Amino acid sequence: MRRSALLLLLLPAFLAAQLVTFDDGRLDPAWFGPSVVFQPSKVFGFQWLKPGLALPGRTLRLETWEPAAWLLGRRSGKDRDFLQRIEPALPTNQEKGLRRGLKGALPVSATNGNLRLVARVVDAEGVGDDYMAMGSYGLSFDMKLLDADTGELLGGFHGSLRGSSSEAVTLHFEKWCENLGRLLSTFATPQLPVKPVQVPATPITTVQAPILPRPAFDLEGALRRIEGLKLDGLLSEEEYQSLRRKATDKAK
Image (cartoon, rainbow, N blue to C red; front, side, top):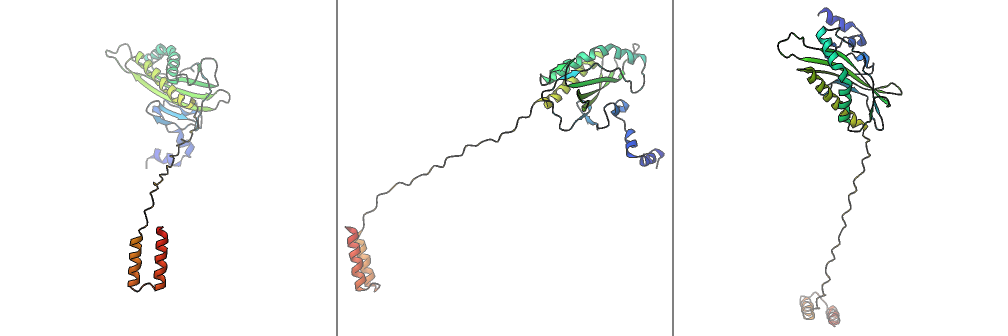
């Protein structure tokens, strides 16, 4: 077994966790807090949201961006020049994208709000002037959503974007912020209670059978049947006479 693998087995779990890197070291979970467990996201890169997050009635305050962190160390002049070109536009692109995605679900302000959105650049990659062909520019950044009153972390996001020019990177960044606005808007919309659907009962229609006229009593047929029963020996003379009288009375 390699020495590094053996060391991992011997280290306590909390120390081993510190050796895990995200986005090649461009994402530092310590900036967000110990409760964050990031999940990869196709839209944002990495994200975390507080379980049960609800934002109805809140206002989002966009804080001034923190100084660039340069988590991979200070890059060359072309990288710093690239960030210097796009850095002034990042807050504007952030606000435009968020407003477009939120569509009024959360008011956005630069001065007031009970939610704080804090952002910073963690890495940038530019292209030198001596390149003969258009290269690939890169921008990596963090954002965290905080409760302004308590400081509680409500959400954490990390993105890394690339483009063929500085303009392309800023457009990608604005689109990224628009997607973030769409996500937050789903938590800002009050969840209305689901009312049970009342299905009207189908009235039961009682179909009354038509009243048919009572058929006339067949006296002659009744007397023949009584006569046949007497001839078969099934009736005594007394029973025979009694049934004849009843049949005659019924026919009246």
